[in-house]
Structures are given as structure tokens and as C-alpha cells.
Length: 489
Length: 46
Image: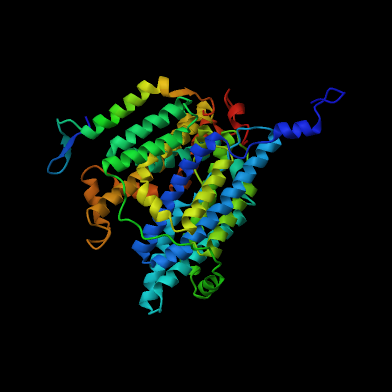
């Protein structure tokens, strides 16, 4: 459709640029992201009820519906952001930033804020210690959201100053330990399900083929995985849930005001500020990861969405902040675009509001879809090497190590807990360090590297890039310097 | 491969078939073998 001057008419250009909201790859992406979110929601259920002692009414009636709102807000906003970028650039391969509940904050809020708050409330004889614990969690989530919002205005500057190798290798360290090795253990613990679904994922994602009948690889993997789980005795998981019920999210301003008056901010400020900065840093790394994969998003806008997600969580009753997830290059390579984000937000909202989360977890074990998450982990690690200059490979390796070390520390501590320590069997003490040392295991070093490993990885990797570029000894020189330094010079 | 047994303070290789792994690797091999007939060029990924 051309006009007389031979130029394409405005209407035609608009039509040709129109980007579809959902493509086939979004189905694969949805399975991966929904599985990630499902793990977090199950952790919330387990930890809130099992560790802090929340009643089921509070978890299913307040916390989970609020968590759904926070996830929906972000997922829809990031989908619109991706769609707008696609329309603006005329590209059809733009993938939305993945987003959900922050795992690290989840554990920190349970063990470092809500549990101590409950203990203090019990000690001073508060009438409802569990409610006090929940209110402390709400306030911490609100404060984290405000920190994320505030940092949105300076974060881009930090990102521009930091070498890409430092940002991506930190993510790769988390992906290698906490995602890939974690799920590899699970794959080899349940090989019938794990290896078979891994074969499907390798075929369709590495092999770039699709099953006949246009069935997405993710659907085949999860369907076959679920079938194998039921036939091999992995499913159903736990006892049959009770009937589902509708729980619409409602604002909890009264509890937030009560929390403000309860003096819950100052005692936990060290945790709140650390977690807030940790979230911002993680989000920055993920925005950089998306840019390295070809999708350049505005840092301020992306962090603002994240901040509003956490604030929405607190306002409706979830004590858990949200974050931009790791794995954008993986989801992009799956073929996911903007639709997977909306599908995930809708799915999470439905299962949380209707109380069917327990049924899904009962019928579809994590094992059925773990191969997709394992693959996402592999893609994040690969990107750290592929999207950085060859000369910076040593810096990427340096950035990987603290994350792997932190995962090793976690494994060691889990082992101690399994042996009965860190609980009623006895506390963790300095004596353990000596015992580990007898077997040439330097546990003290593992514990030290675990603290603030995100910052350690980024700083060490950035320093290594500086040394490679010889920036520590004056202006960059040598044949590699101009190319490698051009972005952060 | 993959079969293990507990020793006093460690684990050691056990020379016995690890049947779940036989099935798992078998399933993996089968899926790769029949891929020529069950899949077609995708082009969307990567």
C-alpha cells in the first residue's frame, strides 16, 4: 500500500508495526515463569504457617491474594513496557522483564523480621504476637518498596559506571549455584522425570525444533513430567487439600498504621536497608542482562514499577517484596515476548484469589517443570560469557565465584540443620569452624564470602576488568582498551 | 554409575544397576532418536 510518491502510507506503517500480544513462545515462557512464582508462593505458605505460625485464614485470606496483586501489577506493567518497546522499534523479538516475589527477601523477612518480631511480642505479652509479626513484615515490605522507588532515580548512573562483565557475572554466579546446581541435584534425585523432561527441553530449546502439531516444548515437558510424576509416585504431593474458596484482596491500611505506631522500623532497619539495596542491585543486573540480550529498557521506569509492586504488596497485606527476576535472556530465547508476563500475572492471581494454589501444588510437582528452570539457569551463565568482550572472560570467572561460594555455604548450613544443629539439637557456634577445618573445609571463608556476595562479586569482577584494561595504572592503553572501555569510560 | 551405598562416614560406588537412571537415560535417548519424526524446524528459539 503505497501512495503516489512511492512512500508507504502512515496507516500501512502502523499496521506493519503492530506487535502481537501473545505468541507461541509465550506459552513456554509462561510455564517457566509460573513455575518460578509457584515455588515462591509455596515457600510463603510453608514458611508463614510452619515457621511464624500464621493461621491458614491469614495466609490464604490476606497474604496470598496481596502477593497476587503485587505480581499482577508488575507483570502487566512490564508486558506493556515490552510491547511499547516492540511497537517503537518495529521489532517482534522484544521480551518483557520477568518479575515476581524476591526469594532472598522472602527468607530475610521471615527469619530476620517476622520471627524476631513475634518472639518480642510474646515476651512482652502482646495479645496477638502473630499479627504483630505480620505487621512488622508489612512495614518492612513498604519500606523496601520506598527504597526501590528512591533508588530508581540514581540507579542508571550506577549501571553506566559498572562494567557489563561485573553485572552479568554476578547473576551468572547465582544462576550456576542457586538455580542450575540446585535443580541439577533434583534432576538426579528423580531421574525418570528429570532426565526425560530435560531431553525435551534440550531438543526444543537448544535444538531449535518444535513438536509436530505446533505444541510448545514447555507444554510437552510439563505434561509428560506430570504424567511421569504420577506414575513414579512423586505426585500427588502431600495430603489432598481442602476445598477452595474465594479470597479477594482488601487494603490493610489499619494494620500498616498500627505497625508504624508499633516501632517496627528502627529495630529492623539494618535488614530493611540491606534488602532494599540488594533488590535494587539485583534489578540493575537484570536490566543490564536484558540490554545485553537486545532489549534496552529504561532503568528508572523499570525500577519504579518494581517499587510500586512492593508497595502494592504491603498495602494489601503481603509481607514480601517483589523484584525483577533473573533470566531475561533465557525467556527471550524460549520465544517469550510480552504475553508470558500477562499470562503469569493472570495465573498467579487466579490461583491465589481462589485458593487453588494448594491444589496445583498437590497435583503438579515442581519436578514436572524443573528442566525449564534449569535451562534458564544455563542461559544466564552462557550470557555472561557471550555478551562481554573475550578479554573480560577472567573477570566473568572472578564474578562467578562468590555466588558459587555462597551456595556452598548454604549447602553446608543445610547439612548441619539436617544433622540436627541450628535448632532444638543445638545452635550454630564457632566450634563448627574448627570441626570443618579438620577436613580441610574452610567454613569460615564460606560464611564470610556469603555475606554480601552480590556486592563482593560485582566489585571483584569490576576490579578485574580494571586490571585487564590497565585502568588502575593510569589511562587505558593497549590494543583492547578502546573497544572494551567504550561504555563505561 | 550413579548407584551408591553408605559406608561408616561416606558413600561409595555400588556395583548394582541404578534402574531409575536406566529408565531416565533410556527415555532421554528415545526422545532424541525419534526427534526426527516427532519434531519440525522451529526457528523461534535461540
